[in-house]
Structures are given as C-alpha cells and as structure tokens.
Amino acid sequence: MKRFGATLLSTLVLTSAFANLAGAQSGDIKVIINGVTQQYTQSPIVSQNTTLVPLRGVFESLGAQVEWDSKAKKVTASKNDDTLTLNIGSKLAYKNSNPVQLDAATQIQKGQVLVPLRFVSQSLGAKVNWDQRTRTVTISNQANGSTTDANSLSSKPLAAPVTKVTYDTYYNDSLTYVDAVKLAIADSTSVKTAETTIDQTGKIMKEAGKNIDFVPAEAGDEGQDKAFKGYAQTNLNYEAAKKNLDMTKEGIEYNVKDLYNKLLQKQNAVKLAALNIEDAERKLKVAQIKRDNQMSSDYEVTQATNQVTQNQAALEKAKKDLDSAYVSLNQVIGYKPEQRYELKDKPVYSEFKDNVETKVSQVLTSSTAIWLSEQKVDLAELSLKLYNFNTAGNTPYEAEQLNVEKAQYATEGTKRQLEEAVRTIYNNIKALESQYSQIQAGLVSARSAADMAKKQFDVGLATELQVYEANLKVTTAEQQAEDIVSSIDTLKLAFNKPWAMQGSAGASAQ
Image 1 (tube, helix red, strand yellow):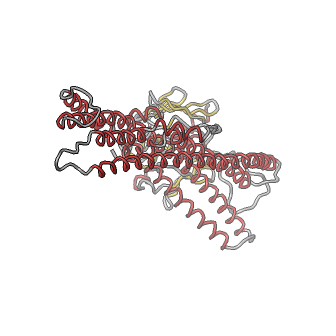
Image 2: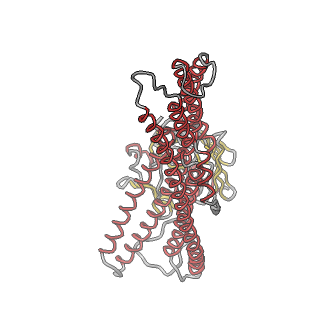
Image 3: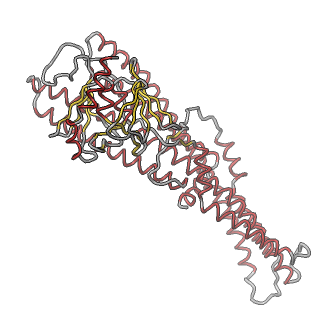
C-alpha cells in the first residue's frame, strides 16, 4: 500500500513531463502497453494538457478488473488490494476511498469512457514514458519494470501471453431487439400513413354504404349496380388498408432484425481487425529481431511492415462500416446518428427443423399479398357479373372478362413468387447451417491446438507468437460462427413471413 501511495503521489507532482502533449492532436497519439501497440475505436485525446485514453483497454491490459455502473456513470477498477473509482464528468477520483484531484475530467466519447492516462497507469503501479518525437506513450508493468529488448534474442520464455481486444465499449444505453422494433414502429411515417388511411377509407366506406339498399344478384338498375360496385371497392380499400398496416409493421420487424444483426456482425469485424493488427505487429517484432541477429533480411521486415499497414487500413474500414451500421439502425428507430448503445440480444444457434412444404402451404394461405390479390379477382368478377349490356359507352364485355383473367394471373404470380422465396430462404438457411457445422468442427481442432501451444509455451517449447496465433484462430472461428448465427436468425424471420422482406424496403425508407 505504501508503494502504491508513493507512486500515486509522483503522478500528481510530475505532470510537467506530459505538458507537451497539449500540442498533439486527437488521433496522433500512439499507446504501447507492455510492448503491444493498442488499437482503440476512439483515439486518445488531449484535454487540459492531459492525455485521455479508452479506459477498458488500459485497465485490463495492466491486469485490473473493471466494473461499470451505467446508472451512476461510475467506473471502478481493482487490482490486488487497491481500488480506483472515477465518475464521468468529474475531476475527482478515489483511490481506496481517498479523494485524488485529476488534471482533466473523465468523459465519454463515441460510447467509450476516456480517462487520464498517467493517473490510471501509475496508480496501478505501471511505468509511463512519453516520446515527444514519435508522439508515443509507452506503459509497462512487467516485473523487471521495462519492456523486452527488441534487439536481442533470448531463450528465456516471455511472460504468459494474454490475448485481449481493446474494443470493449461502455455505453450510455442498451437496446433489445423488441425495444428497437417498438421504437421503429413509433417513429415510422409509413405506419402513421397506414393508420390514417384506415381511418379515411373507413369513413368513405360508411358513407358509400348509405346508398346500398340490397345486394344485387345480377345486372339490374344501373344506378344501384354502380353504387354497389363502388361500395364493394371502398370495402376492399378499407380491408386492404388494415392488411397494409399489418404488412408495414411486419416489414419494419424484419428490417430492424436485419439491421440489428448486421450491427452485431460489424462489431465482430472491428474486434477481429484489432486482433489482426496485434498479430501483424508481433510478427513484425519477430522479423526485426531476426534481422538484427542476421537470421533474416530486410525483405522480411518490409513484408511484415506492409502487413501491419494493410491490417491498420482494414481496421479503419471496419470502424467506418460499424459507424454506418449504427447510423442505419439509428435512422430507423429514431435515434440521433451519433448515438451508441449496447446490443443486448445475441442470437443463439438452434437447428432449423421446419418443413419447407408445410411452410409453403401456410404462407399461401396466410399471406396478405395473396389475400389482396384474390380480393381483386373477386372485384373483377363482380364487375363482370353486374355488367349492363344496355348502357351505352360501356367497356366491351370481352375486355371485362380479360380483367378477370389478368387478376387471376397476378394472383398466380404472387403465389409463385412467395413459394420460390420460401424455398430459397430454406435452402440458404440449410447452407449456413452446413457452414456452421464445419466451423464448429474446426473449432474443436483449433481449441485443442491452442491448449497444446499454451502447454508448450509453459515449458519453453513454443513462442509467445505461436500461442497468440493459435488463440487468434480460435477467436476468428468463434466470431465467424457468431456471424453465421446472426444471418440464420434474420432468415428465420423471413422464412416465417417472406412478404416482410418486400415490405421492409419501403418501411426502411421512412
């Protein structure tokens, strides 16, 4: 405890060394922890001559356990017998319940908590150095107090590697799929329009019904026939408006499901991209050591450097894709474009056992689109039934017959489209299930290889890089499996209501 307090005291008085950070721009600062360059979705920033970095990445990389209280907006980090507490927006922190004044307030940027780097690092017993020329912060809490010498080869095993992703984010809010659907329906102008149309057509139908004295069995009084056909049309319009509201909501449900699951996939892509950068940087470090010890050429270092650059570009693209995914869902649910939140619902894999023939039959009898098409056939047949040959200027009877045929063809076409959609979705789900099974089989081997690499590392028969790469293969396969489960989850909804996919296109534009 005394050593911890002394280190903390030095943190508060030795701030001048970091004063030069004021000139650094956001995104210019590079953070290296125990020899590993950190990748953050929110770049470090400078506030009041103090560097602030994403909290979770630094705390956990230094071996601390982190807890986040979303209601109190409070972060607690614990390591050994020491506990740090920081409150969002406050310059006052606490170390073992004792108040400590910060140079800059803890804050949230793009869903991540940013904290003063030097305070956090040195409060957890780490060594912090700042290189003004390269704008690099180097942090080390290794037992010898320094990072491994990159210019020497050693037969001594490195510290046991820990594979982490510094993407983990603190959110101001969380969002379930059900709540997202409710928000989207409440914000949809298509739903509001459909509800207004129901009210409007209901009033028109009621007014049209005042002129109907009986239901004609065949052509008779022209005025009565015309009034009844008008009433039949308004009645169809009213029923269709109610069906259209249901279809609009179903389209929104599908669209939200699709965007929600795609957002989960984009989050996985960012996490994996960050791990790939760390992998490339580890390989670069090995290449540099081998070159410096005449075990390889500059070409190998150049290739490794290029791979780091490519992986960094891939991470930037993954971040942009993630931002776009947030914006797309936010637009549908009525959130601001910059709003970020935690997704609470992650699909769980379960074997798809629905019978495609049974589903085709169900869809053909329950589809709103088919119902509407069949109603148009009935309306065309009614017009033919009430055709008056004595009225001058009427459409030829044969033309009215063709209207019935056209309506029937349209109904048959709608049925075929939905049947094809059901079968296509079914086959896509089964194809994804096959991929999932293959990945699961590969995961068994990958996990076994990772366990073996760790055991070999513990006895000095494997390198840290080999252990990391074995773990990376496991993580990559796990995230691929998660992405497949998300895609299956979306398709299952489409399988039950294939017409919802068509309705989602219009709903998402509103």
